[in-house]
Length: 167
Image 1 (spheres, one colour):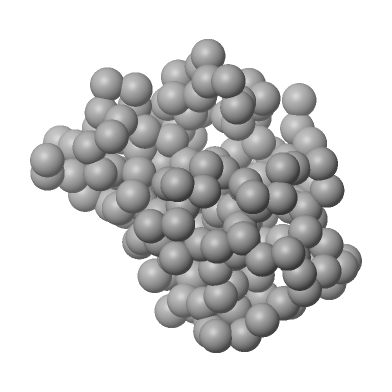
Image 2 (cartoon, rainbow, N blue to C red; image 1 turned 180 degrees about the vertical axis):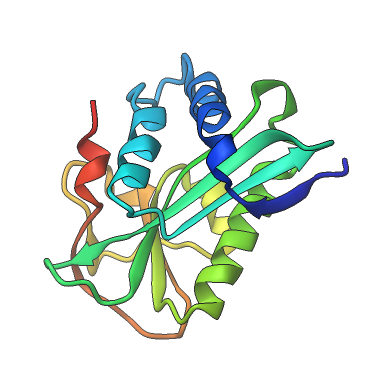
């Protein structure tokens, strides 16, 4: 499947919202607020990396990365998510390519690490692993994982941007 990955553009905002809402619709693990979270992150100028996948210029996937804190401090770590792919194109490598490109861009920008709350079977393929020294309140520990981008270790309580509390 041929697709291109590029940074989001202002003209992409509505389709990113629609795509995200459609990708998470009916998912057991979804809060139903993923599209609103991206909008709130954008409004707060907190989208550190926001990439889209396109096929023939049509946006078919999106991934967001935003800064997180560890024990209340910004130490150069980021959170992955939400990531979404148009429902009819899921499981075709688009989401994985978006994640890999986003991690590459974070690494190039000097980020120290990335966290994710998600399916361990899926996210382990990118190098994420559970670390009991790093916690996220309210989530099953095995679903909260980290990936060091510079070889450093971190411990403490992680917190996503307040936009993740968006309605």
